[in-house]
Image (tube, rainbow, N blue to C red; front, side, top):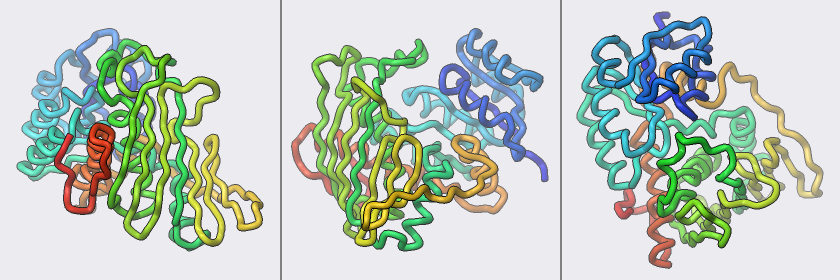
Length: 341
């Protein structure tokens, strides 16, 4: 079957990580890369090794000179409106990095742009696509612990570590934790529980030692359809041992618990016995899974799992958390898309 031709825009920092992972995806052919910095392009070519592709210092030139089916937009949120519109105008489907925009209002505008073209736009939510998360969702669907009633989720990272110049745009954002990191965890909650959020209450803050600006810690209480209660604490201003980027969490039901700790997935019985979950065999995971799943969706004539309209629900949780922290009030999420923030 013919491979989908792909242009990647943004190859510095996380963009390089994308290249490392997607270059082996058999359903695509990388036909060009673009970035505003020559040094990023040079490093990207080293990552690609024997795979030689044209390089461009502007996405406009890449879109004009190279015919492709799909654009991967691995760039900061403020750039994504223009890039998405330009890619769609050039006749390409789009996968955009999370969060899809800087604010929820901008995300709604991006959805409106996407809906004006007969093409697909999806948002990367790669935390879903690991064997561990698949195993936990399967265990929940099988009723292994009964209905999920309580979730305890903790995320701790020192966000000042290993941050190069490509992350400068994150500095001094008002809510860097909620808008940049919690979107992953909120989306993962939706995926694992297979349920939609009803309401949340949030309080964000910054510890005294934070020097990067903005609130880097938050506590959020969430309620999901079906009655699941989630207690979420996250901080990117951690001191001491870090969790994984997913964090550590426990999903508790009447018959036991499912736990994810330090990268491993467990079933914990009512008696407290802990057993590693059997993991599914996956050809791809992480961003490689994201891209391959998108290709399969196009071939099958369906929406990708993390289509922009679906992902807007996850992003609404971010907007609601920011608003709740500002107002000190519970925010409802079950009355349609959340329109503040």
